[in-house]
Image 1 (tube, helix red, strand yellow):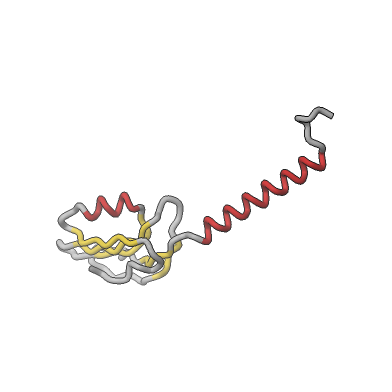
Image 2: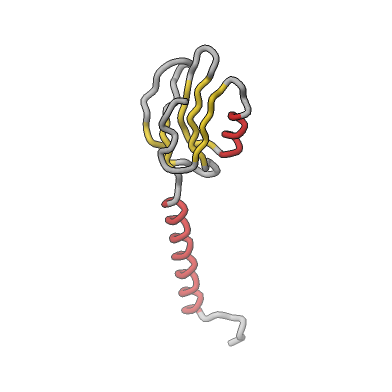
Length: 108
């Protein structure tokens, strides 16, 4: 047998190890997902029901935002840090960006 060729048993073991490694990575990735409060009114200025949201891919930040102009609406949710920083640059929105579980509790 050529030294570059693997036996069928070796290939099977390698596939099992790779599959196990993939499962571990996926579990760890999901286990480290950020959890944020989620409350987005259905209508501007309306009320909402607060729930908890597990942030998905590329959403690494919790946001609390309140509009300073009429209809003075607000929202809490997962967002990317880049998008949160864009919101912070608006003079018409008070924004809190944070990156720990359930850190976006207050309407600012």
